[in-house]
Image (cartoon, rainbow, N blue to C red; front, top):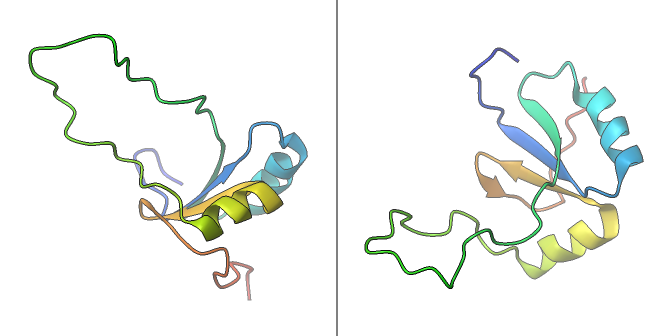
Amino acid sequence: MRVGDKPRWLIVVQRQNVDLYQHLDRRFRDIGFVRVIVDRRTGDRRRLALRVERDRRHADRRRPPTGQERDHWRLFGYRLVYGGEAVSPLVPSLEAR
């Protein structure tokens, strides 16, 4: 993938699942439209106690996961994101033909 290119598929792996991350990273390393990353979130970073005159954030960019997405995250340890939106775990295979 060239610098500045945005991947079409993002595979987010749970931080404690290092073996899965390494496997997926090796598998998709040479596919330019896929990027494998480790989930770095630890919670919402916004501080509720601070009051600001004008909040520049328009809205939370994260869409709450559906029940199926939460189950997939817990069972398989990763989440697929396509173009900024999470997709069902029942996506077509990305294997080379």
